[in-house]
Length: 565
Image (cartoon, rainbow, N blue to C red; front, side, top):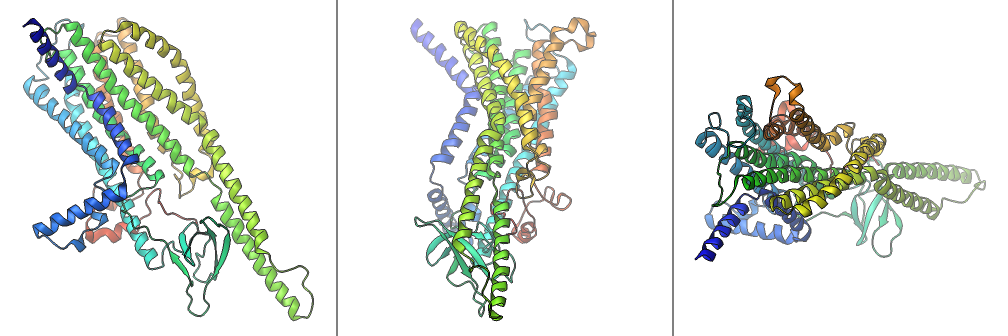
């Protein structure tokens, strides 16, 4: 019987720990989204979802299946949809817990402080604790709206582009456009942006390779044997650089989600709600458990932000190239050849020998191959050396956060020998992290001056402002927490109204993140990561009757943006 009772107590403790283990949920959610993105066959999934929706719609008798396409259902199987659905569920679940248990049930403004806590629960901090979840949820909803509109803009841009290409318009004849010529796959390397252009240059991408010139039919004004390649997959499918930008935009939502969880643990720790959580639990176990959980919550948020910094670096690496220079050189060489051929024809008409033979396309192709090789080397060097400081900062920072999570985990389980070893390693890592922070800032100051990043097709002139938003919560999180605990340790030198305990300082840190910094980053991203006429389209949901208005805008990071050549 004693063994059965002990097993029941252990089972109750296990159930409670699992139910209140939001850090593990966060890690499993991120791991699941990564695996879903990398392993799930998107095309097959999109077609299955579309077929299911058509079957349901036909059986319910609400329309014909021809009215339903990928643009209506393609968002269902995306990794960011799954991430935001589970994040929304956790945010509103934790917000409901705060409203029901802390505000209504325990009455946060009147609840007493747990015996054994070294300070009272200040009234002004209680009010902030009531306001913070509301502000955090509103900021989360704004971030959710931003993601929905941003991805919707990209989808509509893809739909418009495919329609234009099917009509042989749009970017069909521009540089980097995928085409078929004589049933061979090719890419345009010298486009025809002007309607009067009579020739384009293509590069074959099959196993034979090589370059070729395609001439416009002077009679029909058509490009014979040249056809556009039209993507038949879901228009919701994004390029790698778009997904990296989306990670940066989603980041504040994950931070708000984990900050809400951390606030609940801070209030429970101060007020002693749900103590004992399971039979036989001591107050020391209760304190260690909640402090460890709140620490892991914030470190999970910090880890995701370091991933965001790495995603931003990968986004920048995409724009490192010499494509514009190659296009300009190729066009100028064509102009020189054209003028030389005209001059040679004039000399022949005057019965004189030309000073040099006709233009040799092979020699020009060799020059272009050399330029493209130089462009690849330029991109490789800037990607792996030019962004080295940012990459090392993201790696060391993520390692530091994971190490902090491990320390909190083993501290909760009273394995102090492991904690001491991990803490010793953490102490050695702190100066390295500080050094990589300085190197990261210096690295970005140098890289941000490159025209590859500041051009319109890339990050624009606000590239530095976008990078600041990607890592400001890391700087604020460390700096703000350090200032608050400095006040705690030196409160004897401060006036009485500034005296706060360590638990109150932790709650104030979480509250300020949700009231001030997370909403500020959400609004910041909303303005700097979206190119829109805010005076006309702010908080305006798109309907089918207003699609044309939105398609006239040029959203950031177009998947098919091309230079003029």
